[in-house]
Length: 637
Ligand code: GTP
Ligand code: MG
Image 1: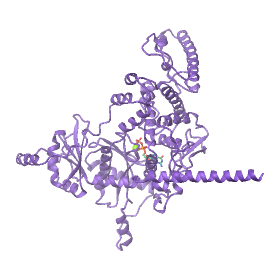
Image 2: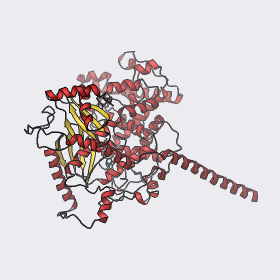
Image 3: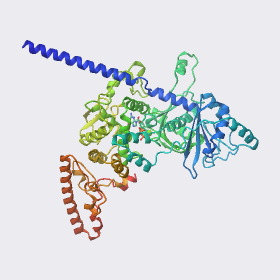
Image 4: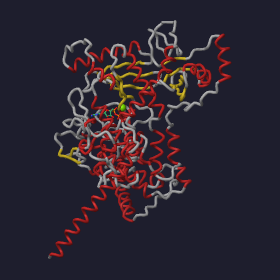
């Protein structure tokens, strides 16, 4: 007995020792991995400073670069130069030049002239002339040199060899067919996932342009509000943005720098300020109205200004025609800003997080689950929360819970918003000290994601990223994701029962397709180059996303045409039959085929019986389901 107890004790000590060792190793790995990572605040600061060193100049074509470079070099040393175009009647060309320091960019801006023709119509349609009330901003245009100036210019050109352009047409997203060719040429689904991420994510120029849009707003009001800061957040900065994504911008009147805050404490002279006359929300709405007018009337490039002031977070939407950018400006959404910081940190903690989220976002878009305009469907942000939660709840988690990040917070991490919401969590990756032992590949994780949500009990459970577990649902919302920073709110409150059901159907479909793709991973190189495979079969075009009979009552859904060899449907013999290596899979497919064949037969018989005019549908299985939006209504959203 004693020996047994001693053994048990020994075993217990050994286990404790092993767990401690593992924790120590994981801790060391975490610290090593976190070293040298840029924090969100450092990223925001460095991009903001980069914008202060930059100017945007409209030119007549890319060929103007040498002349522009020589002209602008007189103000300082140009360190990077990017070219991009904006679609208009003709393509409009722009150069984004970055100087070695902010004073040089300031000198270039201050040297600029105002347009003499103050006729006051749209700057872009006036062929690049900045007509209207003279206003200072980093957006300039390069006019043709006067005859005398031209001679000096050509001398200069001979002396200066311009820095090569870092990018040409640097904001053009990869065309869909190019992307597909690229994905077809990959060696594996794993590589497709990486390629998709690398070729569709927002590039460096895209980020630079977004910080310039922010700086323009900030500088425009700096005379009256010297402490105001316009800060990008959301997918433009959290690493989850794709090319062409909107810019979310928050205008903060309390964004004092450290030097400004120190002066606040020391000075005995205090500014007189106006007392707020109404309650906080209507005050913000009135201020936003005023800022909206200012942007609309005076800022070059700003057009199509819309005020959405009744929303939970009031915003001003506008288009920037020199940047070809949609902007959502808010003044009271600091939790959104800190939420972006959390997403940024999640993305930095493990290299699989962003490529996985990208592919899931693209899949959701391609099957019509998400849509750029808000509505009853799931938003990209909620979808990202689903991905983060999936990565937290794995047996070997890839992400920590938010409460673990709150526990490790230091005093410098304390952030409380103006309306008292606590956004404190550890900002330092070393402090978070999390290293995952999960070795799953991206393609395995993608499949597990679809499988996980096809089983998830959305009916009864709420998702908590704070606790990294599912909780009882506190109300009857179709989908409940606890808002990580305002835990009494539901991030996915907008999602209707119908859309939640559609998500469940689509994740099952996706799991099925992806599983078959993994089974079929033995294609030759030539076959891979010639046909759709892997992710491409997952990203079916919205036109193809039609509702089929019996879909809702099957554990897994597939395209009927994927099940049948073409010969069985329309007599053609172009597609070779699929060989399933796994016997269970083969059997399942066979029985589904048999069942579907029967159903098809019955359908055909009933349709011929009810209407002779419907004979054209005999080779098609598509019907319109009234309970669900059709592909067309989805496209029209
Ligand atoms: P896309 O614009 O679709 O590319 O994605 P996005 O991540 O920028 O989403 P969106 O523009 O809808 O929101 C911008 C940011 O606001 C998100 O990244 C979040 O950080 C934050 N956000 C959005 N919705 C919520 C919410 O319900 N609660 C909180 N706390 N933050 C939110
Ligand atoms: Mg956004």
